[in-house]
Length: 366
Image 1: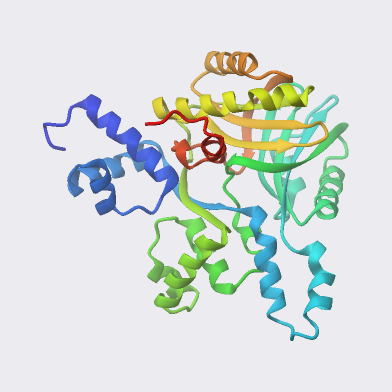
Image 2: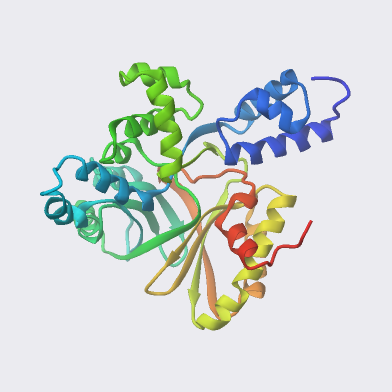
């Protein structure tokens, strides 16, 4: 490390690197050095230090909502023009995936972690499962081919823990920001073009792996693999290459539930919340990990990661002061049983919230 870079400057550059990697986890050291205006040696050293210090894991962020159209395309190509409509439309209900959150409340005793893992069995549906302290005792984020499949999973899951009295609440969600890392078991279910799927499987394991290795493993030519990767980004299935912290430095995680009681008042103040998100991201490490809309009750869930409980409490109070027409409460995540939260730093200029503010002309001009 050159002596001209102070410790304070070094930390500042590392924060910039984290935000860059959140948006583009595959950025080359050369491009990173150009963006930061430092030497390649310095960029490589700081990058390597960050990977070790923050336990960074590079992976894919998937646009689950985009899968159905490309599964449709693959099915359509298997039929001739005469049979395409009848065959493909017949299978439309089974194309694509939906995202769900399941909340559990145990009425007396609670199952152990081992019992919960056993209850999941071989299902590819659950991607994240954690114990909670609050109105609910457990949460599962799952991806399934619609209500029938997710309900079958819940019924089977409850059979395995039937000695524990419990209630569950199923929420169909629409992602609005962030991601949960997806398991290989789920990715293997994608009925998309083979090359697309193989690239996703390879990059999900290591987002910075060489494409030559993916091409060799799945027996594709390198030029074809590179072309397919470029196409994959354009489909929207692959939102971006990013990272998450396997063992987050900030370990106090919460789920904030927003219940809309007056829709007009909520939407009148929602942009103030988005503006605060964008401004906060410019100044500090992003605390948001996943935001989604829910229905019945209408509202949203916000997964966040803080340094301690005081900061979480302070944030909830701030959110209550910003938003009108809502009821807000939060639940603490006490332990993660399956998967990981997508804890990362992120440049909110690349978020849906920023796009909404930009479209409405609510961002200050530079």
